[in-house]
Amino acid sequence: VYEITNRLSKAPNEYANASNYEATSVSTNSDHGLYERLAVGGHYEEIRNLRIRQDLFVVALDIGTSSSGYAISSYDSYKRDPLQISTFSWKSRTDGFQHFKTLSAVLLNPSGELHSIGYDAEYHYINSLQEEERQQWFYFQNFKMMLYNHQISRDLILHDVKGKPQKALKIFAFIIQGLREDFTTRLAEQITLGEGAVDEDIHWVITVPAIWDEKAKQFMREAARQAGILNDRLSIALEPEAAALYCRFLPVEKLKGSSQDEEISQLKTFSPGAQYLIVDLGGGTVDITAHEILPNGALKEIVAASGGNWGSLVINDEFINLIEDLTETDIMKFIKENHPDDFLTFMSVFENKKRVFSKDDDRVILHVPQSIRDIMCERLGKSVEDHIEEIDRAQEVKFQRDKMYIYNEAFTKLLSGTIEKIVLHVTAVIESNKLKVDSIVLVGGFAECDLLKSTFRTSFPDTRILVPEDPVLAVLKGAVLCGRNPQILQTRVCRYTYGICTTVDFDEKYYTPDKKIHIGGNTLARDIFNIHIKANETVHIGQKGTPKKYYLNRDDQDQLDLEIYASTKTKPKYTTEDGVFYLGILVIKIPQMAAVCNKSRYFSVSFLLDGTEMEVEAVDSATNETTGVKFDFIG
Image (cartoon, rainbow, N blue to C red; front, side, top):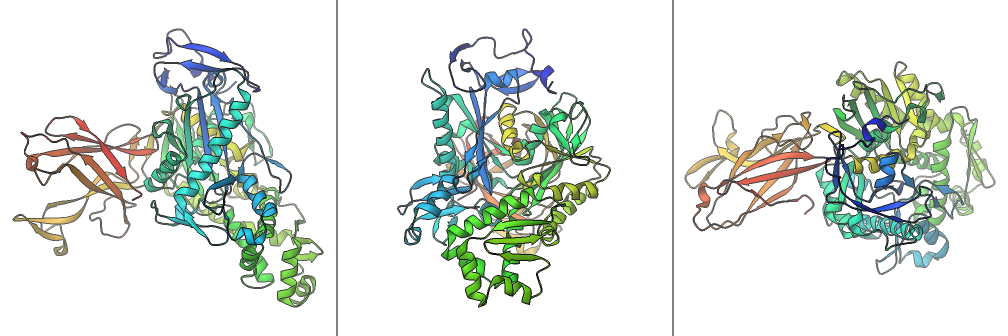
């Protein structure tokens, strides 16, 4: 029995906005029975004061640093069981295994056109292209972190594994396009009657890390638009929130208590008033958020989302450092540039080993491609085995024919540095916010690591450490639930202070002389951070902030451009001070009115958080009507 069953049981007169619809059955080959095409008047129905999105399908796309995939829920299936979410396996022709997700990889032909994504892209690049052909093709992998480490714009450039450039927006659009086309192809194969799903039947959800800012969210939205997804058919889900919602819906028997390696009793997952922490352990980033269960079953965010670039790919860098420490500096860079196929194969093997490594394993065995062994021997001037003996590192590693053996202590060291940083940050979040969490829930691919779970158990002995039975899919399935339940999170804690750059009357008591300017006979202070939302402020979703006035300058003015800034500080004074960063332009279109003097005309601007994205409302003083606004955060 799922925890939300009672809320979703349909009783007479309980659906305020779904009293009449027609359903025509469409046969499928799905394990979940019939899909239904619902002709409904609106996209939402009210179920006990929480909006449920009615679209025929909700499809979530999880674009991860290491892997990507999608999941789907039909409306009828959701009403029967919210956790009836379909995911799809992906076969890697490189290792021969089925995977929950495909690689976050994109392959372009020499003309810069999309050839393939995921495991197909990897296989074609490694096995079908000759080395001289690879110089002309473009292969991108693990590129998501570029949106975390760089200034985002439409012109941001990514470099492929051989250093060749392409626009980042194009690459992200291509992987979204590839996932979208794969989904529509599989759906068409399942539906045997009728014309199948159309754009109006599908609501799409794309996941992003909670620590990304508004620029990155708009970037992903623009990439989705270029991939053929309509803007009004798309919502953005924050990864740890999606995972939290998935775990919130799970009965406890689906959560493993890693402290005892056994299933917890048949109690419901969390009761009203309970607080829990979600740690999303992705490939690129680690995201942390904390929620409290409200009496109506909805969620309240109690701490602003935080995290950092401590994802499991950092451990890959540690592995590369180990290889180069044992052999020669930059040897892996040389291998990557000259033998990218073997480099990718070698790193793929390590990627799988680090997830399944147990603290009780004596050693980890990796297959070493022949080209890598040959390069090592050539650079060292001797066999790798002899070299390891000479430098007295045989107690850590051993090379024998096509195998590399890494012993327990050395492999543990590769992982422990990153794990310790994660634990330290979680500890800081709990202590600095005086949280009394009942549970810490670990999700993401790295949550499968036994060493990580045991470290959390030791570090937080009085807190339940829980892991869903499919942690790698928690974000993906949770994103589907976010799409169906746009109101499930009712309050959010802001990560940043948001405001608009403006000028005010100069007062020497408050403003420094360098901010003094003279305009039209007036003495003003420039670069003032006019605060609309404060960092660490609890905001109700959909609730407008206090409006603030922004005046026009000229009678012929046809638009008002306002610069939006953000800061980690709660009370920034100037937009030029440390800790403040520029987000983008807010453009307000001004309806022209012959009888109105623009110099006395202003717009009352209010900020609000609608779900995971910021929105702005502008009310024209001349008409008292809301006018159109447009963000441009990515240039």
